[in-house]
Image (tube, rainbow, N blue to C red; front, side, top):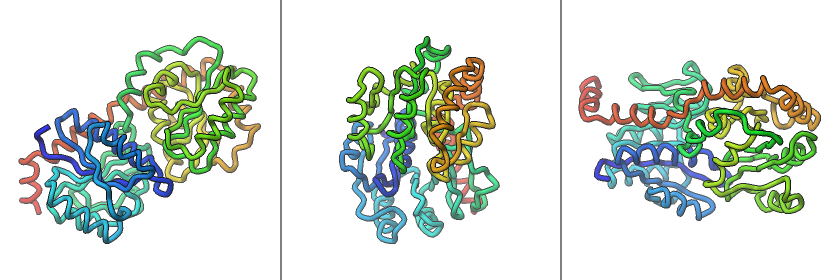
Length: 356
């Protein structure tokens, strides 16, 4: 790779969560296909995540301070001057407008990955890979480009490749998956799994988690108690196969929910974070999912009834699958890379400087 690199400023761990890092890795993989190396300036927990970043073909720089702090700004500016990246991608809710403005003054193209719309963005490019909030919620500087919504969902290539495989519903008996995403802040995966195991028509449940899942050991103990009906899947290579074979999924309205919609998996959504409400509501409006509500208000009876209704209605499952595939086509990473390449083109940079 001989082109100018991309610098990602993102943290991952129990406090900030892991969703931000995961979507940055998807974007970095798409940039690599355009021969642009990626550097991750990150505080990672657990430390083994650094190896995962490197195995994906990226370079990892261990950050000394949490993202958004004055000390971190000084370190990030220093790395920008050293690496001379074509763009700096910031995916940190703690990064205020002053932080982003200081990065913009370095001359690098500043890109913000954000799904909260909580600050004013001086960035040149603002990307929301979820289904909300919309453009009217964002405050941004003149000349900024906004890429929001379903067309820019960051679907992993290995997941998108399952679209042709799951063009039709798999044969019964019914299989379910619990896929609450990179973060499970309320540790509900185990409770939802037990509810599904008690549903009469569900023959098997697969729980899709990351290797750093907080309650991974508890889930594995649960799986050991009924190995013929339950399995915990944490290896990335096994996840796409389970998605292709399932009949429905319980999700949280995050990026994993969009990936399952892309493949055509009917979903029951239990919202666990305020930032995921717009996505859950949009999926329900489009007919790709049924939103059961806020996690604290969803009862066991609600889940059991929703599962029974879904499994009793094959036309509803087919409709959800079609609507999900129509809404999310999985080409979001390619569209984002194309937009970045346009903004990073030398002629475009000259136009921006002349306009300024």
